[in-house]
Image 1 (cartoon, rainbow, N blue to C red):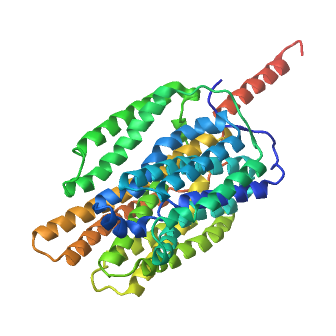
Image 2: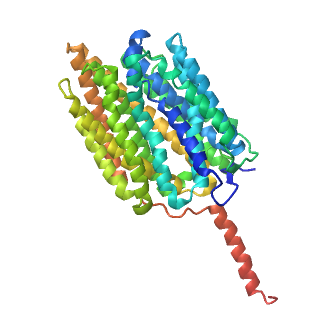
Image 3: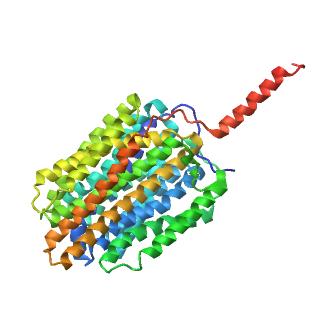
Length: 500
């Protein structure tokens, strides 16, 4: 049987849909929160485990790398298994990973715990997207996706704040111990409450595609991250090697998916839908800016402005709250006016904020940093929800699970690429400054400045792309059109027949 998206078991929203989506959103918020909660702990972890910034970034990059490898398989899982089973698998993996990370004796074990956590997180995002697309009417998706945008954007944004509050009173291990009971509760409630809104199908798993996918995305992200380590002389191998492996594997992966057609692990024919392609590219650019900034600001605030972890976390809180509030407002506006009137000003505001951040230095006031961070989050809030809704809403139902997996995969690849790019530029500029005799704090400040300039330049691409965003028309399924065409032709032949 061809690999298609799970088929909804009912044309109307199933009973208790609100509770189902609420549970999925809450669970997703908890698991995605851990994607960035460690960022404010990086300076402490660098000292405790005696590692550099480019090595410590693997707590975030490794998390995103694992998600990028696992997410392409979720299209298959959501087709093959029941919703409840997929949910329990995701949350159980997250719980186990959290326990491993909390008790990690060395840095390698901590990274391992984060990787296991990421497996659960990777499954949760496409599960949430696919469920919403199957149970929420198109005219209400903007509001619902506004809530989901809080999960995708606000959870990572407030992660550093929660991490800073925890670190002010407790050790970094409590970032994980405090999450364990919440995750266990969510798992138990999911096993009781979650009901299937799709019909599982027996479909084959193309193992070759899984292998190509793993080498492609892990090679690209590992290579990008290794550039920063190479600047410190700590890279395991020349970055060009994993990058080359990633590019070749990605080409093979794309070739095989196009060759398999309906049996593809990840149906790339979703990119044939213009609105989907444009929106996905803009989401990727936005994720690069968000995650690159999230990893730089804590380092800047603590190592340049000499702020505590608690102060750092609290300084990043207003931006996260602004994004959360606007996510709901923007979602409702999308249902009324469509994406472009929201995305274009959002891209301009985000770009202006990043250019403003390029002025940050050793004497910048705390208020200025907070203001630029709030402005950046406001701009991103106007982009995330409309772009996600426009991208996925433009697809036919049979591509829902594949579109969700594609969006989630590219989000993680883009986030990891942004993190790697910002850290790499920061590291190389800092090292160059130190070699010239510049004091360490000034060298680091200059390195952060260089990274933010790169982010600001990339943000200009989002402004250009925003002009091409449009409200998605009712998606047309080629298979349905073919079937309808045959039916219409039969009817026409009957009417033209002299027999009647």
